[in-house]
Structure formats: C-alpha cells, structure tokens
Image 1 (cartoon, rainbow, N blue to C red):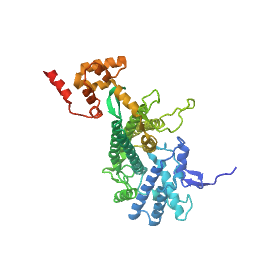
Image 2: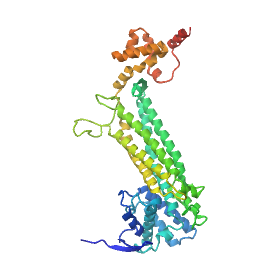
Image 3: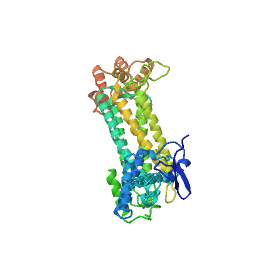
Image 4: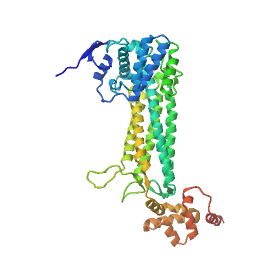
Length: 478
C-alpha cells in the first residue's frame, strides 16, 4: 500500500508529521484531529473575507515598514489567491472548532505563509514567510475573526438583496395581473368580506420590501470593525497608524463601507451586530413562512381544497398516488425558513455568552449567519422563479367564493343594519343559499342596491357612503 509523503512541523506543543503536499501547517493539522465534528468547512465567502483582511493588514504593514517589502508582497500575492478561491480546499478546519476561531485563523495564516514562502522560492513548511511573525504581524484572532465574520456577512448579503428584490417584484407583478380577481377574504380561517387576489399579492410584495429594508438597516451595525484592537482591544503590538490604514485598505478592496469602531474594546466584547442581522434574517424567515403557508392553502386541491390559484407543476408528488402534484416550492420555503429561525436561536445564545474582553463563541455565530444568508438566498431564488412567477389564478373558483362568503353580509350593514344582516347570515349557513339571494327574497334590497353592493371596487376599497345608505341612516336617526 502506498504511503503518503509527510513533512515535520513544530509548534509550542511539539513536533508533528503532516502531509507533505498540503499548504496548511501543524496547528491546522491538530485542529483537524481535535474537531472531527460536522464535516462542514468554512463558507467560501468567509475564506474570501479573511483573505481580504490579511491582504489589508499586509499592505498597511508594508507601508509602515513593519514587514519587509519582499515578504509583504508575497503575502499580498498569496492573499489574492485566497480571495480568488484558489486555496479553498486547504481550509480544512470544521466549522465547530476552538473558541474565538483560533483554528480557522491559524489555518489562514499557515496557508498564506506557505504559499508566500513558495512564491519566494522556498518549500512548503520552510516558512521563509512565517504564519505568526509576518502574516499575522500586529494581529490577533481576537480582532481578525470578528472583523472577518462581519465582512463575510456584509459580502454575503450583497447576494441576497437582488434576490429579495426579484421576489418583491414578482409579487407586485402578480398583484397587477390579479387586480380584478375577486375572492373571499378569510380571518380566523372563516369566511370574511371579499378581497381582490391582487391585493393579497401586493401585500406580500410590501412585506418582502420591508424585510429587505430591515436587513439593510441591521447590516449597518456590521460596518464598525475592531481590526487593530489586537488581543484585548488595546492595540498591543500595533503601529498607531496601522488600524486606520488597514481598514481603509479593506474598504477599498471589498467594495463595501467599513469603518474603525469608535471603541475597539466594544467591538471585541460585543457581538450585538451579529444578533441584529440574524434577527432581521429571522424576521424575513417568519414572513416567508407565512406567505408560503398562504400559497399552499390557496393552491390546495385540486378538487377538495381552496384551488384559488395554480402553482407550476414541478415533479410527481407521490410514490403511490398517481397524478398527485405537491406544492414543493412553498414547502421548501417553509423548511429553509425554519432552519433560519433555528440558526437565530444559536446566534442569540452565542452572542450572550461573552465574558469580559472576548466572546469566544464567534465560530457558531459566523456559521449560523452565513448559512442563513446562503440558504435563504438560494431558496428565495428558486421560490421566485419556479413558483411565484408561474402562479395563475383560478378565476371562476375565486368568484364563486367571493359570492358565497357569508361575510358578504357585512356589505349590507349600511343598508339594512347589523341585526338584519346577522339574521341573513344564519339563514345562509343553515340553507346553503347565498346572502344576496336571501336578501332579494326578503325584499330588503332593490336590484339597484344589490348592484351597488356587489361592485368590486366598493367592496375592496374605502368609499363614500352611497345614497341608499345615507337615506337609511337618516331614517334611523329620525
């Protein structure tokens, strides 16, 4: 059996054999052995973000003369490759790992150091560019990881925003398409007054846009970075100008607004920003669950459900019932949203778990928020394209429900009063006859009044009282 070539590396614990070809080093190898937990590795956007942080730091250290030009240039070139995703397979530490993200951070330092050494003509493990002394100069996990997870979330959110806009636009398009489709409203899962199908979809669009605004506002709290705070937020082992320069470099290369935190200790102690963003994502998830439930209910059937709308047929729905088609996209939307709600609970528990100068629970915060953003982005793209955009209305069924709802009696209140309208509702429920038919039979309304009552605009928008209603009001008062 062939054996894998190895090389020896040494850290403060001792000497260790690691595969000769890998770009990570001894501390990463120990982490791989220590944390075989989930099999899940760092999010690609988080890897990109730490590549940017390392490049920003190297640029600042080079400008300040803290790392010599040759080593700094090699670090910058290696970091560029990390940013491009070239070395993602070398980031092998599990997402559930040592507190504060030390293992992920050292994985990054070692990969960049080994690649920079190679670029300078050296061999893997020689560390002409050292992971701690050069790549990590003036830095600590305690300021690098919180900076990285904030930047990673900001970058990931840039992919979510256009998807949210597409969903809102799709709902708005359906609102126009279904503008004239009357149906029964429902409250408490019982008949309510008529509503236009388009009005329901317009409201969905508003909900999505409000969620988007909420996430954007929450993300502003991620823009204050503690990079330069070093170990406990005091900036030990950093140049006085390093912090400003490094963060300015980071803003320029990332293309997002980031600024030095007003208080570096606060930026290290508190991860409130992650809780705020996670909470906004949770609120989006709650709205998506609600909307997906409505879509499933309105499309239920085809023969024994509401059947007010038709969803695109995407796949067979049963291994035993022929011809069955299920609302798979709304189901997917709900399940993904449940996960986002659960992730928010994990973030909340982690955010409150800090002690004194540091919250060491950052890896689970980062993983949870990044996963929430990613799965929500991917799910909403599918939900929009494969469900909402293809929804059609079953207009005859909707009109039937609009005419059949017992709460149509509400429109009679201005004409015959609440008490008489309630009696008509009782008779309608008992006999199955429509509200209008009973009112006509009892000669409580003229045909002109019936026509006025059934006018779709009058039933679904605020209107001035009609003359007949005004006349009744005068008679009551007299």
